[in-house]
Image (cartoon, rainbow, N blue to C red; front, side, top):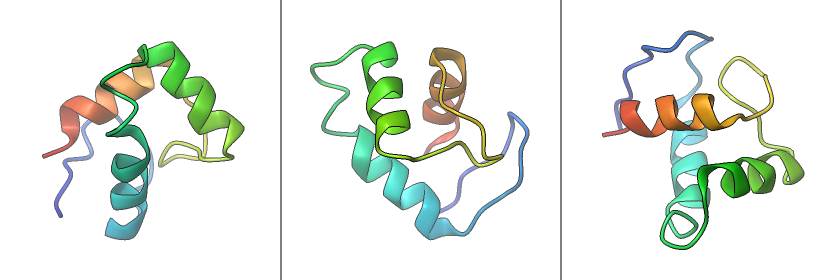
Length: 66
């Protein structure tokens, strides 16, 4: 899996991106970006740079995903 890191932060191992995508994919059909961010943050998952998820960060991540 190859994800372009266009929104800053450290590049993590491909397993990180797979984990995040696996987490958010089923949620995207029924939840808003804000609700998905809440779920990610509650699960203790952070962005590639270690920051909490926000709507903008999640949108950028999704746009960068293959």
